[in-house]
Image (cartoon, rainbow, N blue to C red; front, side):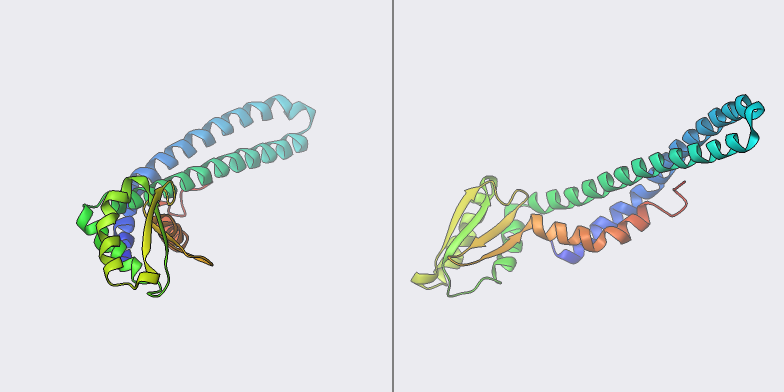
Length: 199
């Protein structure tokens, strides 16, 4: 799956979920504002006799605190939703059929120096899927530039990390998705969370 297709899949899914998320966030916001306004009105009436100016100032402060708490909760929820979308994209990549997964990993491995030996760190679950690809690559590399597949717990989501004697090259799904999240987060957030979903 190309980066462009991943990008399109993420944006499409974001747009599909936007209406639901906006409605849910707006309903929660309306309820919080109504509750806060009702409480503030009651408090205002109790304090009115002791000084209108103090009560108004306190009301403004309480509304500001409610807004701040709501905005913090909304920001946390937005980040959780974005994390989940990009995690789903990573799972789609890792869950491709073996042949497609090897084709994608093979394209990434073309970036490796042809004259340097090293380890290809991969997730244990990917070892059998990637072994034929590594064997094929080693047939085209010299005896001093062989690649050794090393299953383990890194990278977590998929792909490989090439470790040579003096450097590493990160060709993992983890890093690519992290870069995509950083690049696409504003665009996805704009589709999911229109500006009117705020206090």
